[in-house]
Length: 464
Image 1 (tube, rainbow, N blue to C red):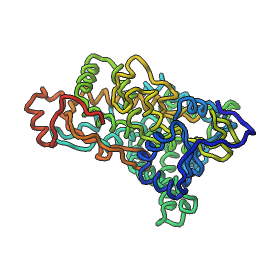
Image 2 (spheres, rainbow, N blue to C red):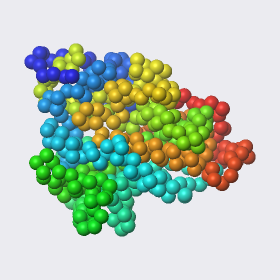
Image 3 (spheres, helix red, strand yellow):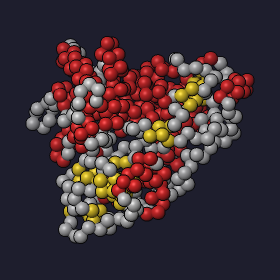
Image 4 (cartoon, rainbow, N blue to C red):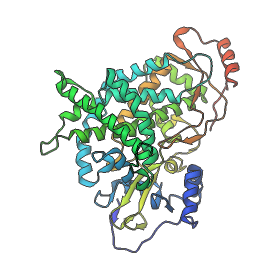
C-alpha cells in the first residue's frame, strides 16, 4: 500500500507538451491518447490536465493494488465538483472516516444476497420495454436500456410507484444529463445566474426532485408495512449510525440521487455494449441462448465480465493525495490526482493475453482478479452498487435471450462515443430481433432481416 514519506518527489515520466495542449488532446480524443501514452510510458505516467491538475495515471496491477489499499488518511476523493452537484449528503462529497461510516450504513441494502430480491422488478421492466421492440428491422437499443435501468432503480431504490414514479421518470434524466455536464466545470460556471443559466436550471430540477423524494419519504414512514419493505429508501430510513442516530432526510435525498447518477447510465451503457458485442459473435450468442434455456448462468456471467473489460464505460478511479506518498517506485506530492486507468488496466497483455479479443471464455471458471479488472473501482471508494449492477445486467440479458432472437451482423464494431457520463456505442447499439415465442427463426426470416438491416450474417465474430 502507499505510505507517507518525506523523500523528494519522484514522478513517472510523461509528455512534455503544455497543459493546454494535453488538456485539448485529452478532451478531444481521450481514449486513443491514453492508449498511445500507455504504449509509450507503460504502467505509470504523469499528465497536467484542466480540472484534474497534475495527474499520475496508473495501470500496473501492483500500483493499482497499492492505491486501493492506501489509508484514507493519505488519499481521498478527487471529485469535489460532482459532490457539490449531488449535495452535501452525497458519498461523493464525503471523505475519510465520514465516508467510511456512510458506506457502512449503505452497504446492507446492496449486499450481494439482498439484491436478489430485486430480480422480479428488473425482469418486469425488461418485459415492459421489449414489448414495443420492432421485429425484423434494425433499431437502437441504448435508449431502451436507459429506460429499463432508470425504472428499475426508481422502483428498487426509491420505492417509487404510481404518480411519483411517473414524475421521477420525467424529471431525472434531464437533471442527470445536465448535472454530469456542469459537474466538471469551474465553480463560476456552475453558479445559479437565474433560470436561463445551467446552474439555475439544475437547481430548479433538483428542487422538483427533492419535493418528490420528500413525498416518498413521508409515504414510506406512514406505510403500515414499512418494517417489511425491501426498497433501499425504506432500508435507509431504518438504518442507524453506531451512535444510534439516523441519516437526515436531506442526506437520504442526496444519496438516492447519487445512487441513480452513479448506476443508471453506466449500467444501461454496459448493457448496450453487451448487445453490440453479442451480435458480432454468433457462436457465443447461440451458446448463451442454449444456456438460458437450460437454466444456466456461468457463461452469461463470464460474458458480463468480458463486456465490462473490453468496453469500459468509465475512464478510471480517482484519488487525491492528502500528503506526499510513496506509491511503488514513485513519490507523489500532496495535492496530486492519481487515476487508476480502467482502459489501460483492462487492455494489458500481461493481465489478459490476447487482450484485444472479446473472449468470455477467459472468465469461465475463473473470476477476474480485482487489481486487473476494475470497472467498479476499488478500496473504500469501490462502487457500492456493484452487486446490484451485475444482477441488473444478468437478469436483463437472461430475459432478452429467453424472449428474443438477435440477428448477428458482420458490420464493424461500433466505436465508443463520450456521452459525458459514460462511453457508449456511437450508433446506439443497433439490433435486429425476432420474438422466440412467435415461431421458428428460419432462413427466410434471417434473409429478410439481413436485407432490411443491410448486413450479412457472419459465420464467425468480429474481433473489434
